Length: 226
Image (cartoon, rainbow, N blue to C red; front, top):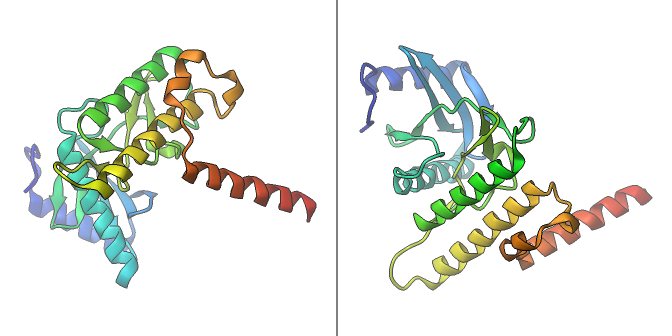
């Protein structure tokens, strides 16, 4: 059941997304989970995510969309994330359209204010029991009006489970470190030598990130040789 649709019915939206998928029209972008469609009619602008592919690949993408829906269900009170209207027909995620610019292309009017707001947003996500995990991907962070951060795309987000769940707790805490490390990397554009003392408390590069960095550096060195 979709919420807050007013003059747009589920039947109309379902027909629209099915036709869009069939005709490959209204595609806004492409992501891990599949194609992202932009609905722009009846005074509404919505994002609809639909899984692509066949077989196992499609099942994995659908599972990611359903995980993202569960994440948004935990974030209904958190500002600066898109509003989620529901999971249409069990497979199309319906979200608020955010009119922002990916941080890789954005002009930020005041970087100190922006990154302070982003840090507070990350902490708010964590208080809600959600870690994003993939904030280093710059397309997942939008800049609205040159000053306000919005976080999108929670397909690989991790929800902290209640009670005794050691594996989940380990993965969640690891993902929290990813989020803070991404914040530092974005704020200093990867130039860690410029990091202010007060920000060092948020930087704790994990083994996963160290290995990933080593592989990347090794690849670049080999590429230079050959």
